[in-house]
Image 1: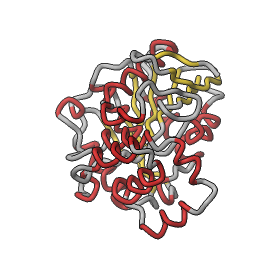
Image 2: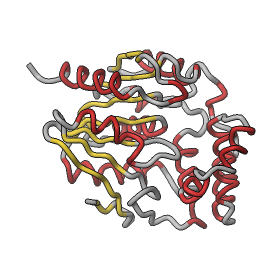
Image 3: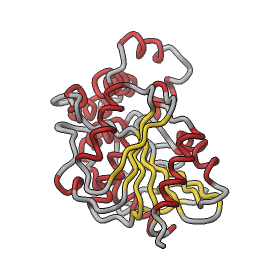
Image 4: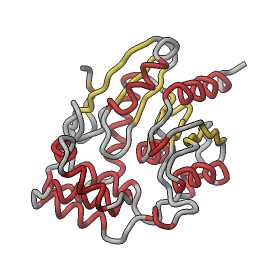
Length: 269
């Protein structure tokens, strides 16, 4: 699998397939490159699709030691994305969940993003519960530094994402839990990305990159409300609601169609 080296020495792995204009996929919390793989597969006939493992996940490394997880800043992952874009060229970026927040932050920082698609970015727009809990980042960083990976994962799921405690208890007893513990350090990063007040800054709101905001009609209401509100905040964005999309999962065929139509509509005459 190809990789690039970020500013701090972190190796960022990615998969590349297809042919045509480039789309880079940036996943969210508890995700790796496999999360967007079905969508990338649906688009690869007409696009070059680049599925990224964010730092600390999948095939990517992480130069930040667990004891120093609290030193993470969003600039680390903007540098990671910039390293990928330097390799594949300026590109459209599809951000899923907190990966959409990250992609917008990167666009505001001047990354070579030509078009932006944001799928259910968990901003606190119309839902104060998504504003981020005070002290969450510090508590997560302390848990990671103490080697309490499972507690860090559970804390992020209940306090950061808002999953019911009984659901998290069930997950903790499932075969999936070991994989979540393996990337526990990254929950600190997504907590930083979505920390209070968790609304677009003035720089993010003024991003001139054409943006498509997507949400599923049957997703969690707070995510759908935030997506509906985003075009009223961003400089050049429109909203499309897709059928289905239960429980924060994107409907592959409908999402691929919306992305393709958006990118085709943005081609120069």
